[in-house]
Amino acid sequence: MSADEPRAAATIKRSRARLAAVQALYQLDLSDVPAETVIAELRERGHDEEGLGDADDALFTDIVNGVVANRDKLDGLLVEMLAPDWNVPRLEVVLRAVLRAGAYELLARLEVPARVVLNEYVDIAHAFFAGKEPKLVNGVLDRIGRRLRPGELHGEAAAPR
Image (tube, rainbow, N blue to C red; front, side, top):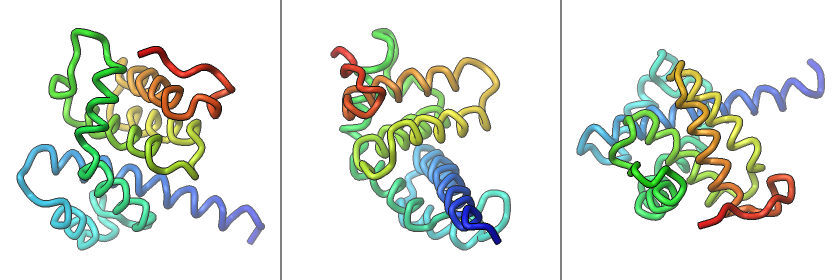
């Protein structure tokens, strides 16, 4: 086992946690079920296609609970970054989940580099969409990242309001 293998395994677990969090947020958006119930259901499913599998459970739980607790603030950020004729409810449900999760990480998980957050959620968008949605995810999260972490994204200025 090389020295990089544990790091690669941890990276995969974090990526799976983000994907599972998007799935959980999708479920939450379509139902009146509490977050704890959806989290428990994904844990129970374990290693099946829609379960947590080898995901980083702590990261998964933090993203889901963080989005739920900060949804109004996150939606406010998203509205500011979307085109003027768009609003959060108008977004497709999976796309909304991807954007909320990415915005949450940019807002609250400062130990995760902004570029990592952008790349992870653009990859997730590619898993669900073949059209322009991944570009939308990249653009919106990039603008949020520049607003929240202006010095981190190549030292570029924060996005205008």
